[in-house]
Every structure is written in structure tokens, then in C-alpha cells.
Length: 139
Image (tube, rainbow, N blue to C red; front, side, top):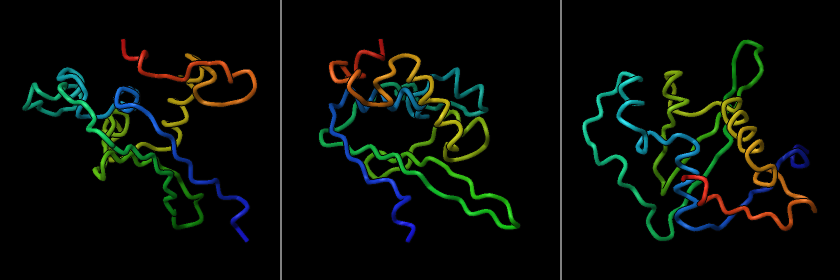
């Protein structure tokens, strides 16, 4: 059966500031600067965009979605990001005219995180004493 290839469902618990750091890290459109939005051809109507804080008990989900291609091409994968049951658009996806981030863009993001702190993306004995709190990454 194909179950051996499936990765387990993983749940992490964190603080609101960590969720906020992740949203900034993936380039959530509602946290983007007016300059970034104008560069994408979007008229920023509300300067309050930057004033966001995750609600208590917020849920941030990263979903790996297989997109089946017809005509013999290999299937592609996308990353759908959902905050409190609402889909999140990222600047990376919007620059490509899409609603979701493709897996290669997400891989680039995780590689960048790995360069900043290798123990954020992976675990092991060398990472047991590493502070994984990403709340300090915003400043």
C-alpha cells in the first residue's frame, strides 16, 4: 500500500509571536508594506494592514497539496497556508500570479531558514540545546 510513503501529520504548539514571525517569514500579503503591494500592482487601500496580532488559540496550517497534471507530466506540489480557516496569500505566489506558493518556493524559504539557524528546519542531538524560539527573528 502507499501508506508507507506518507509522512505523519505533525502538530506544533507555539506562542502568538511565533505565528506572527512565521507569517512575516512566508510573506503574508496582509502584513506586506504598501511599497511591496504597489510593486505587484495592488493599490493598498488601508494603512492599517500592519496592525495585526494573532488571536488567542489561532491555528496556522501549512498543507502540502498535490496538483495532478494531465498529459503525462509529473504532478506538482503546492503549499497552501491557512490561518484560522482563511487562506493566506503570499507575496511570492502573488508575484507569479498564483494564490498559493509552489513547493520549490517553500523549499527556498526553508533553505534560507536553515542558513540562519540549522536547527530550526531539522532536529537531532546537535540541536537539543538550541533555542527554537523564532519570536526574536522579527527584529
